[in-house]
View 1 (spheres, rainbow, N blue to C red):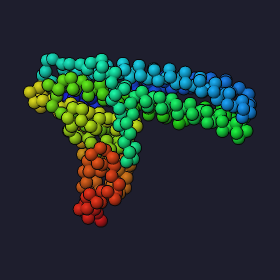
View 2: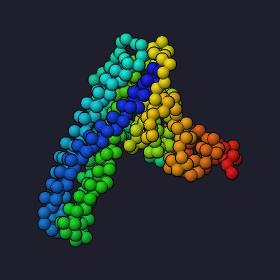
View 3: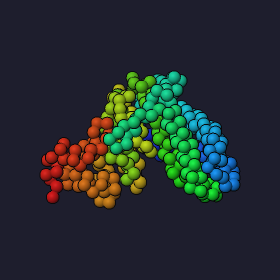
View 4: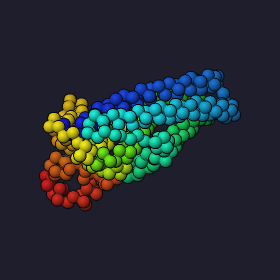
Length: 341
């Protein structure tokens, strides 16, 4: 296989490990939040009035801040270790998949910048918001403290007993907070991994020609990521995953011709049903899926534009990955709409 195909094969397989790692990290860190829930239940104790509620809220807030700060430190430490491991993995992949003999690693300053000056730019509808790792952890922690305080205060005003308030806090932690923790850890892990890989690409720019965007080939992939799959960009040029909360996409280096191993063997990409050729794009994969899978990913109207109108995946979003409305698509692609029955 060519160097590019070998690297796609290597990095897509690696991403499966990364997803398992982030799930394990989320489970480990979530134990701290479950402990917080138990401590709060103990602090609340017996029934209380509105005045006593404010004292309890102050105590619970202090307790929450301490535990959530520890949660944040743990998350950053794990992400830092992961970033170094990812950079080493890229170097090993380049050694295996190219004819180059010398390789470079990111500096310590580049590792530190992943948490401070290199923001995640996440798409939510038409809006793109930039978050540093530090700021998003801080925001998550502050929101949890506010959520817990609100439950206690509202419960006291409504005359709820301590048992009911404790139950609501438990449900908050076990429900929405657990899902948010998993999404937070997955997104930060992908961001730090992407930054570590991108820094390693930059350090080896004498070997690497450009970067290919690679989305996961399954029905959980967003239109945004699917639209970029198979497109090429310069090192450091956006879009750089994660593009949204829970994003699983990666970027794979394309080496310069003089360093390409140039084998005739073909690489592979992973899918839920097995391996397919490394050159298969998301659009090519989607064409071979059942109607219900295409509709699950695109929606009924966009699926018709894709299947009948022949609109390629990259036309469903703007250059920054924001999904076009059907009205925008009709304005930009009038001939495609004329093909529809």
